[in-house]
Image (cartoon, rainbow, N blue to C red; front, side, top):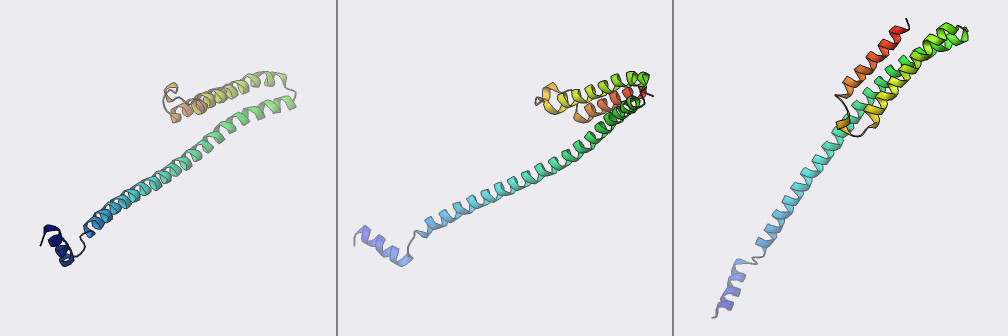
Length: 144
């Protein structure tokens, strides 16, 4: 009996040995599925955290915009009342304050919201908004 005939006889006795290749392929497929599952989980978690950050930022921005708008609206209302009462002294005193408040808000929006370059910003958003509130407080206290 030659060697090839003996090998065929062994194959018949032990069965098809190609299952080792199938096992290797199954193991590789399992690693791929495991990797994909990890990546899917990572992407899903990343999306959840991104949404949480957006919701938190939106809430903070809404509250901050309300504060700034209320302050500006208060000064505008005082100026409008002065104009209705034809109190020129009051109008003359309040118009520059209203302009200064609007300019301070505009500068804040330009510097903190519209500039995309982080290096151009000084400090944090919270610090910048606190500075804006202090400017508005100062402008309002001048009107009292």
